[in-house]
Length: 111
Image 1 (cartoon, one colour):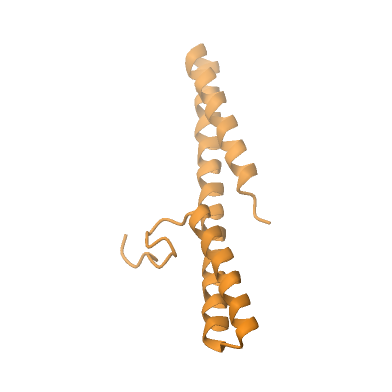
Image 2 (tube, helix red, strand yellow; image 1 turned 180 degrees about the vertical axis):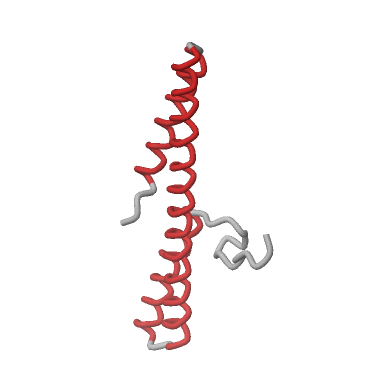
């Protein structure tokens, strides 16, 4: 994908909640050290790292929410097709995928 943002704190084109949380906490700690020592470069660096970490968390949650939506739609379609055609296996698999997508959406709901 051309023009994709690859500037996440993890160095990857994919946002990651764990990496974002790490950088958010680390940035807060660096900023606190800067505040205690009066080192403005540490304050600024910490503030920037914290903001980048928070942005990565938000991006990862948005990505997870969209993936959950997709799973719900595809699962519902498969469940309906299975019910109409009498394919109990397809219907069950569709229901499982739908429920998985719903759970993924709930975990990644925007705050």
